[in-house]
Length: 345
Image (tube, rainbow, N blue to C red; front, side):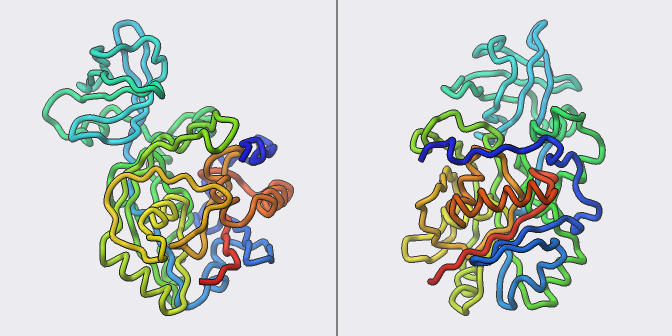
């Protein structure tokens, strides 16, 4: 499909620079079958059904944004994907000043050597020393806010908490699974009291999630791989929910992409550990999920393509037009949507 079919105009004032306070006070646009209505995140216990299951991503965002020097040149680095104990595939700002073998000094006793430049312009960074890389990043790194927020205000101490979900346990993401930012212990307790379960999986979100789609046709775009894991017990539980007539609702596109990567053609979700570069566009047949809770995404993005595959492109264009007109807040710190397609299994 032509990428420009996924375009829309978003006024800049609709981009949220801070999350709702408290988190579960965010608004939520519900697309349930053919119906559309305005609600709030706190309405989830009554919008969903007893027997449904919410699936959260328990990845934890690391301070993956680094600023350093290669000689007199300032080099910006955004870690993307771990390739070894001390090696990270990294997107570089001012890459024309960096070559294989160059050392970058990030300050605070943290340095790395660049190598293996890829076609997409990324480098591998090998961190020096014996300390765990996590300790080095804690000293020299910053929380990697999305460009559409970082370009409007600096990262601050609030973001260290705001940009982390209540489920964050497994360190390794360089972007938050933002749909889960809306959840609080009180909301989760209300959901459980309504007979709605929850489970977790792990997908370490990479910086590639923020890269623009430069191709003119979706067939020409290539996704960056991200590492994920679903253990056997979780896979069995998801299958049991669906077998009993419940719905598996992915909280966030990261959870959805991993579940779909782990689901076979016969609709059975299996244990999974490894990389996924799944790219979901209209025409895709969903096998493992029955709905999605997600934030509002960028125009022409792979994530807007994904929600259009789930609900239909015309439907999502109309829903986003309504959201813009109605003052919904967009992107990582913005409001939510709940997408429940009419499907039979």
